[in-house]
Amino acid sequence: MAKYLVQVAYATESWAAMTKHPQNRIEQIRPAIEKLGGRVDDGYLCFGEYDLVTIVDFPDNVSAAAFALAVGSTGSCRAYKTTPLMTMSEAVQAMEKASDTGYTPPK
Image (cartoon, rainbow, N blue to C red):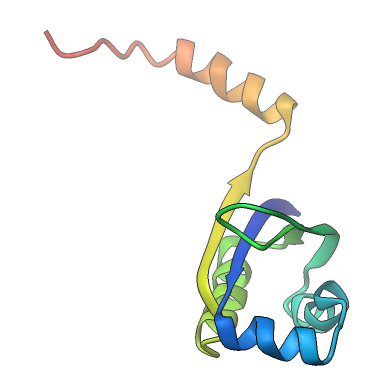
């Protein structure tokens, strides 16, 4: 399965609801992710541009996109970002393939 970094910035209304009724959002999103064939590796509340980050396994890009669309359609987030992740082994393989392409930059 492919790994993805999911970053979420909550809408003001979502923060208001969570401060009124505190909840573990990782446990709330887990069933939807699992229904798409995915799995939550871990999640963290954080400071900065995004409020929550999670590492999620999805079987494919379509499933990752479906989850993004499901979350985005609710209006509960002011920003949502999905970043595909590669293992270091995959990165080395990509570097090796890149060196074999014969590509030359424009002159």
